Image 1 (spheres, rainbow, N blue to C red):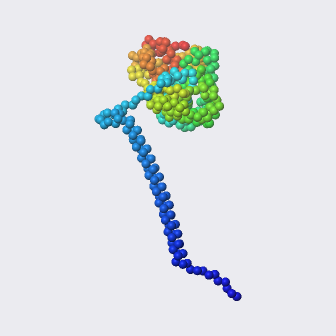
Image 2: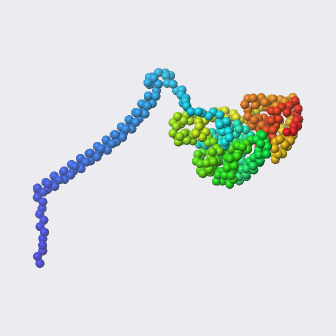
Image 3: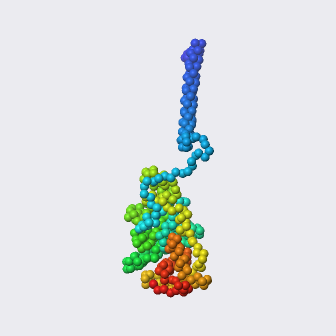
Length: 396
């Protein structure tokens, strides 16, 4: 058997030379590609750095251009006085007058002063004040009736049921006696973070509906507070008629965000100028300063007159005109008579002190006795308490 052999010839010197030539060319082009890619990436890096440097220089130029006198150096040349922004639109300056006839929602982020504004409105409107607050501390809402602390939802629900009964009674008296029949029975109800009550207090929906529609007619003024500006959070989705019963007072960043929706750059700049600038619905509104609002809610002292101890018996189910009030006033200082207290109260009224502050802080009536204090103040205004008598009995 003959084997088939394959003949393999060794490469000649010429073949080896051609291979070396091909390999050298391949290496050359690979190195050339590497150099091009490296150069490209280097150029991109330098370009990015140049763009960043240009932007920084432009920012510095803008700052430099804002310097007065073309940046000329000089001691005390730069004027740092803030220039007021002149807003050409009409600005609401009397918030109490502006909200007449409607209820109020106060919307603002944490720390924007919602609670302070709510108390200012409550004291300015007048009447007894009740606060629904589930997370408040003992130092919050001092001097006011606070319900629901410690997330006591049952207490809030029970109190709101009482509010509905009170509203029915008020409307019944108004229907029988007219507006004069409920004069002096004003009440303000403040709800802190109302959207939280929507899902946790069963009667909250009916409470909101009835107070929105008939509250102001019955002298029941509600102030709802929240950080949320969404209709769904308030339980008012699909209830346009109820939304119309409320003014929305937006504070701080919430006001600025709403102004951005209105695409009003002038209004945005005005809102950012001062913390007292806010929006009442879509209208610019300037609130009193923080000190002014706090002054309204502070408890003033009467240094020269001893506080009277008042005892009274009233029938709360009857209209004011049909009630008989028995009042006894006692003084430690026998030289200070009833007329002196009357004069002191009248003097305080002359300084702009509200009736609510006089009733609570001067006469000593608060809570469930606020109505007695209102009747007492009316007696003093009419001059029926006086002549230095220590005891006085008056029938209304």
